[in-house]
Length: 420
Image (cartoon, rainbow, N blue to C red; front, top):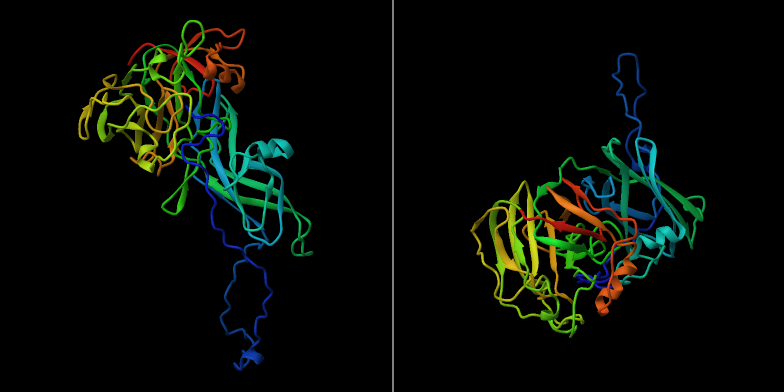
């Protein structure tokens, strides 16, 4: 299980092109040596010229990592979870004052001050919240635009940045700049894939997933020349015992966790694309080191579940994988057992849906479960901490279990799955 400061692949620094602004002189016909043009006459045709697009200096360059895919969730809302990459293209520091998300003139979200810092990280600076980008530095702002159920989903999103510059150059670059309509993106019309749960039984905790600033959500993988957010909607599952604990006895032994070895089920029909088995179980309670890219997911299975969606089942128990590439799986089929292999510090199932068969070089896609019981939610991420040291935890007071369908879980949800 990955905690707040542990990403499946650590955020790395990136080289950034630094732009400079220069004025230029357009030569006249006299200076170029060309003969002067003849004045237009009534017989001379004239050409209509379109009005030029407005030009605006934008010292902080913005782009969207991947178009958001709307997904209905257990809070009764619809979430658009996506990321905006920002790059300070000037000499001097750029301090982000606010970032707003707008659709059709309506402001859907504004982040400012400490709230903006909470959702922002500079590339190469770990998990330190920030609103400051040094010269040439890039960063990511993780966005979660939340819509009420039944509200229209926007077709296009755009962003407004307010930035303070440490080295202004007025009037071209004033000390405080407003960058309007940057990083416009068309909202995806793709629907979240509908699947069955990958586990069976009671009290499965979603310990690490969308849409807060979890280790999964903030994992950005710099692979083959671009950033990928493969774990945008990934879940880490651990199972609570009846007393609210996840292990008894020696924390370092996977066998101390009662759910170690639980059956993992295919979430949908579809062929197996890739399999890795034979990696050893890790010592629980500590983070492994020296892993290659292929080993981060531990023993794993990748399945093509159709519509450009690929399911990834990771950290599987050594020697437990029961399928091979090319096998045609059916929903609910047991494919392996829950383990503690790869980049893990406690036995758990890592599950996500992605846009390519590569578990890291892909973008995470949302998914919804056909049927499940929502037992309740933990009150905060702090409630997870006692679990890692042998303590107990439980859902927030006042939680009432309810049956749900065609919804995506959120981080801290506790669920019962009745099988595929």
